[in-house]
Length: 339
Ligand SMILES: [Zn+2]
Ligand SMILES: [Zn+2]
Image (cartoon, rainbow, N blue to C red; front, side, top):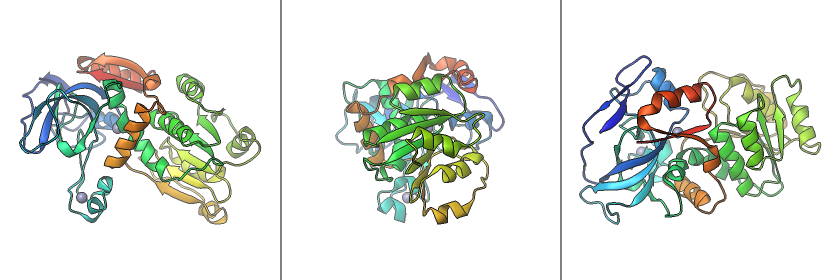
């Protein structure tokens, strides 16, 4: 089968024929029909994030079951499925609580073991979710980034009086925007460095106001004036930029919440007095568990969150090089590859 293989450290990858993965008990083999390129795939290809080599990356995917391993029940060849990337050990305290994403020995498909930038991929039966007939494979491949965003949002326990500000309009921010809308937040404000494709999408997906942060001297004041003169009760950070942490604390209102969804590669400085004086509640969120993934799939199935508007490009697997350069040039929001 054709696969994208990260063969060793340093930048680059190979596009080549490899053997089809061998089925094992409790797992299924999936014919990949759609796989998204994630922000975390980029440092893997650049060699900045170390993975076990050789590795076939790719973890945002959906497809059809092509073969079923021994002992798997309730699944049939041809079933359409979306797949969560988290495989918990099943035995550590976090796994026992159903929090597989906090597993001490977590295995992630496409990061620790071979993933879906290939025609076929293996997945354990316990990671499968049935993809409803009215959803596309691209919808199925979009559940992973939505779930990564939605896990944190569920835990905010949003109320109709909440005003939410979102920093960053990549896929995670754009999914957060739709999910907080689905939860009935009163007012949603999106913050992005400059106008463009992403800010247009935020408008189309229901942002009440948009703030361009580049050249803005007082972000907290700009947010307040966009929010009827009030500071917001919830700030969602989805940029991963170190300076955004301090800004998020500054922008949040009294007794507010700050949710950190961005992936930080550098340390960030902030003023802890903001947390104390305003009694802020800060939460982090990493990946998702089975239930977060299923809830996210349900949001898409019910039309409460839309994946299609974020998908700017669909390309065959062999054009992954073009796909990566579209992402690096920020000409794409979400690229779906169709192996
Ligand atoms: Zn991802
Ligand atoms: Zn575990």
